[in-house]
Image (cartoon, rainbow, N blue to C red; front, side):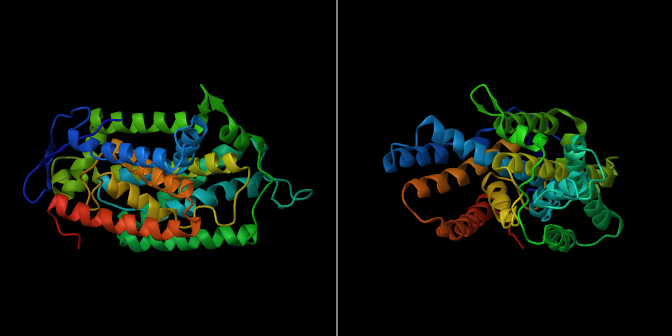
Length: 341
């Protein structure tokens, strides 16, 4: 996982040129001490904390959320945001199962329109289509991205409830179960897949010209356009990639739990933004690294795990997540020196 440092001009904005990239900057490691402190607190709170089963459980529970954070981080770096990712993680698997499951004989009646092997490709295509529509609304119709993706989030949530009639789908295709239950080298496959995707994303941002262009677009889109960067095309591709990542997170989550819950993904977007902001991703674009975003995810999950082992009721998790977001925004505000209007 690598990070990039855009060339800054005034007020922290980026210019058209992007500096040569270093692998990891010291600022990218700012959450590492926090993670270590949380692990020490967890050890004091409960001897169960440092067991292999507990730590593997933490990273597996982080894997699906981390994919959404990965997608959102890319979108934020290029100066946009996508709220609909939390609905995509639920509706993409639902659409796939609706098309491939038989119309009779199961708890959930599908259309039986496609063969079972196509479930995963259909799920990923659904995510890509959602990202493409978001891009069309923002880049062609010039609709405000926040409002457009908020509307998409609400619409997809309604579609999810409408198709499933508010019930969970338990007749999950075997391909979904395989990815969610398989272990590689003693850890869930989902964990290795997420690490591989973060590594690939970090290398893309660091060494590929289109990856470096994301920082230029997020820092100063007009300057990037003047420098010959095809800003709209790149942003559109990033939105599609974010939709695919959210759909893939839906596959892993569904396989992990063996069903698609009626509320799958509800409220996740707040954790996604919290992890990204804590990890150093700027809400104004052009700044941040995927390594920082990944440590943000681990920090959130460790806080929840320590609280759970400490006997704090899960009903307080929502309050804690909200408090973490506010604290992270305040820290980000004063660390960057920029107003967050």
